[in-house]
Length: 388
Image 1 (cartoon, one colour):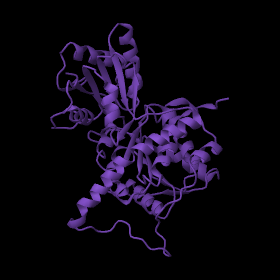
Image 2: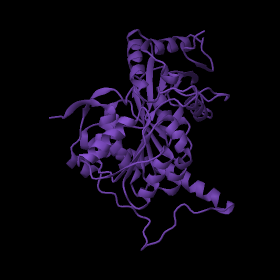
Image 3: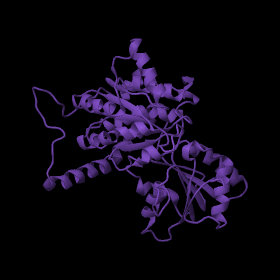
Image 4: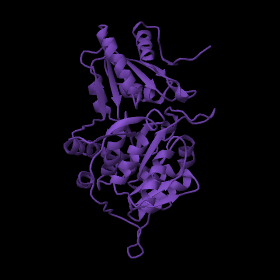
């Protein structure tokens, strides 16, 4: 019998961290991720979780502490949002270079200014090029599952890279959903104790984070890039193993109604469920619409993406962040255009920047984008729903 419990998605995330037998939690409060670390602090205080819970003075310190704890072999976790990630930014670049398997949940929220506590993807796009493996969850169940999956990927001795799990702030973080929990025994089978290859230890000295001269810096970055690209098959294996364990199988690119579709929406995150409802209604109206959802953002699943879009004539790419002053509008659309550049008979790409600062994007919004694109009224990119 399946064990479903109605719970806030942030609490489900915290429960998953507990099940992973994490050794160190570095915590600093920032809306909307605070409920995760609050629940973890309660687990530790109540003796339900054998971990060091460290309330630090800033997000910069939170990830710095995780570097130290991970470097000595402790399974380490932190989470943040928006301005917290911006303050953490200097340290974000260090973790993949040090090959430390830290897992971080990013409760996506707008970066200032103006100040906003609501959801978009401007925070994660600010760390797009830092070298972390980056995953997107669409609902609470996916958030719960991907905590275990993230550690499985990160700690694989052929990977040893940090992982960001993106969950939309408030839309997911504060939503109550039915979550199918996985038992401790099953998690232990899937995720055994972390056994690091290299740790900082006075009896076995190693060097981590050394200064590099120009004669070696390029080679170091090349090695980092190759490690990130090489993680791809191990990400697929971690998803496959999780599917074998609990029956929920994930893929780098998920699809809905793509067979025979001439126009495909492309989404990331929770907005995909709304887009899916719009596509269903469009199909009922006889429209050849479909949906492609990117679950894996880094490393970008290029071959899977090209295969799944098939012979579609149009792509309607939904960005939840803006690249001000750039030629392409949003960062996701810019990358997709680049991916299609050398492809014959490539589809036309329409880019809508939507949901900035938590602006609601409804089923009707997607239908409006579809009509605008198919009719030829849309071109290039546009910020959707601007008033005045």
